[in-house]
Length: 605
Image 1 (cartoon, rainbow, N blue to C red):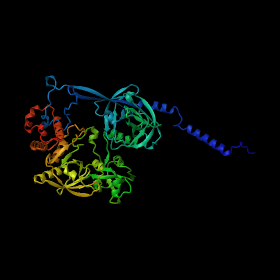
Image 2 (cartoon, rainbow, N blue to C red):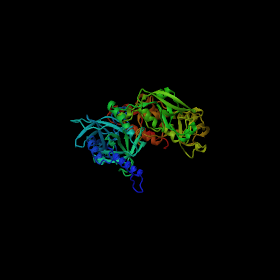
Image 3 (tube, rainbow, N blue to C red):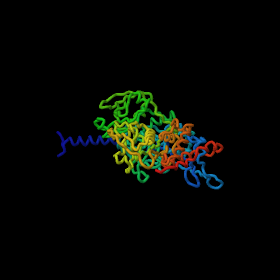
Image 4 (cartoon, one colour):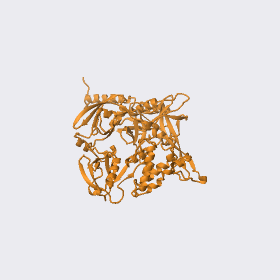
């Protein structure tokens, strides 16, 4: 006899039974519905999470309340009598002395122990420019720390403390296995409140927040606030899968938009900093830019993808392998390059000296290239300072109402100049009242020739313009290219009044528009204006001094001025920064060099 419940078939009972079994299985999962899971995890890892206190001693002038501009000993200006005796600092206060006061600034952050012997990981920005670093532990212990290594490009630093007994340490997990929606736990020192725990999920992966060349953050809604920087983000196994680094917030507090460096990135960098005290990244020697829809169409690509090569450095691996400007790198060791930033990450991660295979699109064909990975020079990053020869200076020249700059990858991308545009100079501003504007020269047009002379550098433009004017010419033939590479010739008149060609703008090496240029910046400017400063090496050699003397003399004699008043101020600032009054006995050596106040000669810009 078969027993049936009225109106309910057997399959329904089987379905209920199966559902019950699934619920039992889910509830027995180690990561679900276990109220003790997170407290037990926190209790285990909390001793390895630390607070970071970084102190910086900044000197300020008591009278002006501005930063003391005394020249550091390692500055390229320091110790050079040519600059030391220009613009001696004027005595301030009683007795002709500069009154200074010391003011300590504190930076609070977080970190975590990765080695029981005392190695601690944190963010580079937490300890940047610190004179003194203190690591605080959950039991109240505080230890002084030294920097083992730091990397500004990924915002990571490794510190070393000397504990009296082994410390509790934690390990990295695999961030590659993280899934959007997965639960994570952040522990840190927000607003100085150490040992703060917050829980959230992975909101997104592969975020680029324009913080550096290797951005690859994951996003979380776990509460991250000021002071959490450098703290660990754990998975439910108690492994570090991320390092809290940044937030987006209009209020300064958490609104659920936090970003963490994935452990897949951090592990490589931390291991190199531990072993070498510096990072060792691969390089191939190219400048790249995004492939826009317009560029893809002009190249014959079916869609915008890959990384467009805009410049190849002679002698570097890419040059040896035969890569050319205009090539689009589509794959790296078989991995598709979906967006332009994928390529720098892949190159940086590839072992130095190994052989990489590239798939390149050129002239409608797909080619395969092999090259040997070189090593990226990162001297500036390991010291935390720029090298003397590095520069972010923006060198800008004005010619007949056209503001002209050297064509960089950034400017090429901004004006959407295709790979067929082989010019080195680009027009970034047009005076609407100039003859160039009347001839319909446009911002974004690239300059190839002036009077049938090829223009490769700003110095070429300055030199040729002066030659033509000295020959009595009233106009010059200009060859320009638009963004797709179409060429056209234009006859542009020289201005009747005002300068023929002049430096009009620059930014300091530090990126501060008010900061003075470096020696290398001054050398580049002199070269662009047609003077010979010798090697662009950031050193004040005899040729550079001679070029400056000649420049000063010509500036005084020019009714128009060779540089704008803005640049004149910047140059004086550069010389002022050299005035460390310790070489007074050598004053006579530079008395015949004149005074840069003469730079005010001529019109202002």
